[in-house]
Structure formats: C-alpha cells, structure tokens
Image 1: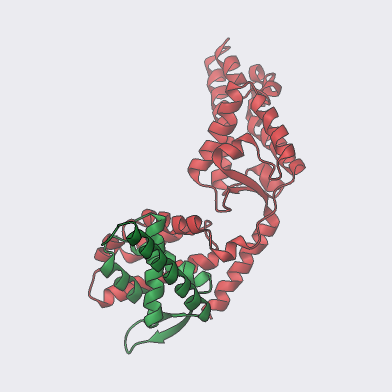
Image 2: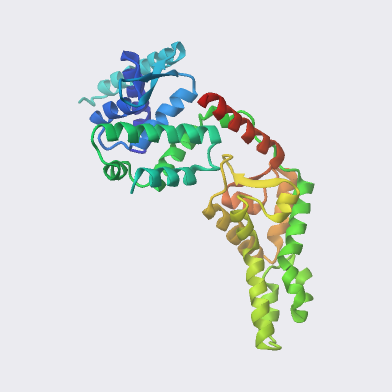
Length: 104
Length: 251
C-alpha cells in the first residue's frame, strides 16, 4: 500500500467522492476503505490533509442532532479542475494499458 | 490501548516534526475518528487495534508528507544555512566542553590537543601505562562522556549542543524536520567519531574544505546522516507564527 501508484489512485478516489458530494473525514475514510480494505486510516487522512493543504478543498463545520461536530470537505473550483486533470490522465493510462493488451 | 493513550503517543511522536498547526489538525482528525467510531458502537480498544500502533501511524503520516513534498506551510521559507564561522565557533566550544572533565586527570590532560585531530587518543593514555585503577576508571568515564557528548545534547536539546545553542544553530533533517535518534547516532558516532578515528583526522580537514565550497556548508557527518545545520532564530519565529495560526483557526 506504499506505492506511488496506489497513493495516486487513492487521491483520485477521494477527489471523485468529493466531486459527488461534500463529506466529512470519517465518512470519506469508510467509503474509501470499503473498496480498499487494506489501506491504513492514517494514509487516507494524510492524503486528505495534503489535498486540503494544496487548496483543492475547503472545509465547513456541520452538526447532526446529538452527534459530534463534523468537518465537511468541499471541492474548490481549483480542486475540481485538479480532479478533472487527474481523471483524464487516469483514462489515458487505462487506454494505453488496454492497447498493450492488459485488460481487467 | 485507550483513546487518550493513542492521542498522547501520536502527539509525542509528531511533536517537533510537523508544525504545531499541522499537529493540531492531525490530532483533530483522530479525535473525530474516535468520536465517530464510538458513535457506531465500537470500543476505544477496538478502534485502536484497527488503527495500528501510534508509532506506525506517525510513520505513515510522515511518509505521506515527505514523499509528496507538498506540505506547503512548511516549505515556503527554508531556514537559512548556518554561516561557517558560527559552526566553527560552536564546534570549538563543544570541543572544550566535551573534554573539560579530562582536565582533572593529570595523565590525560596532555593528550587533549591531539584529541582535536584524533578522538580516541586518550584511550591509549588511560590504558597504558595505568598509574592507578581509580584514575583509569575516571578517565574512561570522561572519555565516554566525550564520545557521547554530542549525541547526548543533540537528543536532549532536539538538534542542539551547548555550542550550537550559543551560536543559535540547530541540526535538522535534510527535509527540515526534527533530527531523529538514528540520524543523531549516524551523524555523531559514525560520521564524526568513527570516520575521524579511522582516518586520523583527515575527515575533519575534508569536512572543512567541503563545507567551504558547498553552498549548504555540509560536513562529512552531515552527508552521512542526511542532515543540515540551520540558523535557529528565524526558524523559531516561524514556529510561533504557526502557533498563532492554530489559535485563529480554532476560534
């Protein structure tokens, strides 16, 4: 789970989730872990913090009735552009490997 | 392990290696994780088991930062490299302090100047010829002090020796994070003592020439341990601005 490739993929997945709806850290972590069960929580939080530090998200606080205060992440327009760029790179890679005969 | 233990160990593991504002951010993420997990009916023990050890968590967090190198807040202004004259002054003071106890032993005091070039010199004196067991034992204790002087203070003062404190210098990792214990040992015992012992002090001369010509004033022991020496005062000012940032964000 330490490879650059997987980190990149995780980042893409996190951005994708956030492009669908605003999410709080724990929710995002659980969603990503449902697809990548062997990823460490620490890695997901760390990637999320970096994405945020780079200005791809901003945060706001929400509170559910009786629940804890939650920090929601929302994609900024810069973040959305970054996601689009990563997505097209990802699709290019997929096309290229398919062309070479690697298929799922 | 309980939540509080996990958070305390996480804080201790990261303290000094990330900015205070970032540390607070990270701890808040884990506080949230515990709060949400407990809400789902998990126990603190189960959550800790799922997370893995705090030490491993620290490793993952630091690995994510350095491999991507994107943690903007800390990279913006690099602390300036220490000027050479300050490093030499600090080294001289450290040398004097590290051999000071030896001055109480008449039979070893005259090797002190030789130690500047060849560190293990007193070992020969202390062992052969032995004047009395007491003196030899005392001298050996002093030599151990000399050998561990740098390690001791670098660990204790988080990258500073008394000489470096005086000159406001600090040894940090190449990437600007706090010096680790293994780097300290590698720098001082392997890079400084061992190299200079086997080369009869040529290492010091090479270090001086190297540091004269490299922009970062690197010595051989810096290269071996992957460290650099920075000027402390501005670095300290930067840390306090981070402190201010947390308060503002928390408010």
